[in-house]
Image 1 (tube, one colour):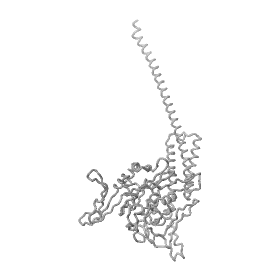
Image 2 (image 1 turned 90 degrees about the horizontal axis):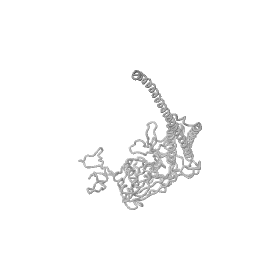
Image 3 (image 1 turned 30 degrees about the vertical axis):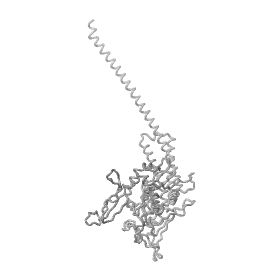
Image 4 (image 1 turned 90 degrees about the vertical axis):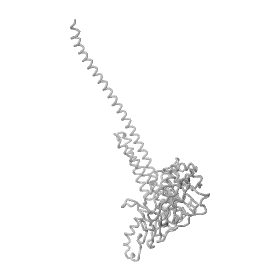
Length: 524
C-alpha cells in the first residue's frame, strides 16, 4: 500500500441504506485546487499534470461558457471510469449461494509476521466485499438475502505445504547489476539471472539465491507472478489434499454445492528485504482463478515508477490490505482498476491515473483505510458484471436454440400450432425481461435487474424444452418416413422378381414346346 496522494477527485463510499440508490453514490472535482501532478514517473500514458483538469480562474466569472467544453470532456472521462468502467475479465454467469475467500498464509516461521507488520484487516475486507456483492433489495420477486461472502485465514507452515514452497522456488528469480568493468553485462549494464530450486549433488534440491550474484554490484530478487500462479494452479488439487482444505474447482472455484471458493495464496516471509511480484512491482497480483501475494517485513521504500507532486511515492510492502482487497474484487467479480478504461478510437485499453486517487481500492496512490469502505464505482461494477454475465449467457444459449431449429430439416413444421404460439410468447417474454434487466441496471437498481435476468432464464429453459420436443417429433417422423420408404422398396423388389419369374416361365414354356415338336414328336 501507500500513504496516498492528494488530488482533485474524491468518490463516495458505498454506504448501506434502505433504498436502491445509496447516499454514497457521488463524486466531486475541485477545479480550484492544484495544479497537481502524479502518476507514472516517466510521464508516460496516464500521468496527471497541470493541464489534465480544467481550472477555474478569475476570468471565467465573466465568461463561464469558456469552461463548458472542458467540463463536458471531464464528465465524459468520469463516466468512462466511474459509471461505465470495463470488466477485467468475464465472470461466471451464475448466482452463487455463498462465496468464500480463503486466504492460505504460508509462513516460514510460527505466526509469520503477526505483530511485526500491519494486519491484513480480514473483517474490513469481508465487510467491503459483502457491500460489493449485495444487491440491496427491496425484496423484489421474493428474493431474500443475497449470497453471503466470507473471508477466512489459515496459517500453513512451509513444512505442511511442500508444493507451495516448490511453486515459490520455481517462480523466484533475481536481477543483478554488476560494477565489474571486466564483466559482460546486458543492455543497460543489467544481467538477468534466475534463482530457484537446484540439484545439490546428493539427489536433493535446494534454493539457490546466489545465482549470478556479482561480487561488486547490486542484486534484487523478485517473484514472477505468472509463473507462481501457473504452478499453484497445477498443484491446486494436491495442495488442497496436503493442507486438508477445499479450494474448489480449478477453473471456476465451484465446490460442487453451489458455493464458490476464491483462493488467496499469501506468502508471509520473515525477511527484511522487499520481495515484489513482477510485472508491476506490487505485493499482490490477481488472476482469473486465484490471488497471489507476498508480504515481508521490509520497511517503507521509495517507488521508482510512481510520483506524487514530482516527488517519489513511499510504498509499504509490508501492508497488503488495500492491494489484497482490490485483487479479490478483480479476481472474483471482474472489477478492473479504476485507472483503466476502454478506448473506442484505439480499440484497446487506455490509462488515466487521474482516477487512481481518492477512495479507490486500486493503485499505489489511493489512501484507502481500514473502515471497510468501498467506492461506489467499484461496488457498482461488481454487481453490474454479475448481472450482465447472466444476460449475455442467456442470449448465447438462445442463439444456439435458434441455430438448432434453423439447421433442422422441416424444424418449424415439427411444432404443433400450440407449441409454436408458446415458443413465440416465451421468446417475446425473454426479450422483454432482458430489456427490463438492462434498464434497471442502468438506473443502479441491481436487485430488480437480477430479478428480471433470472426470470428470463425460466423462459429460456421453456424455449429449450420446446425445441427438444420438436426435435424429438421430427426425428420420429423421419424414422417413420425411412421405414415406410424401406417397406415400399421391398414390395417393389418382390413384385419385380415375381414379374421376371412369370416372364421367364412363359418364355421357357414356349421354347420347350418348340423343342419338343422338333426333336421328339417327329420321331413318332
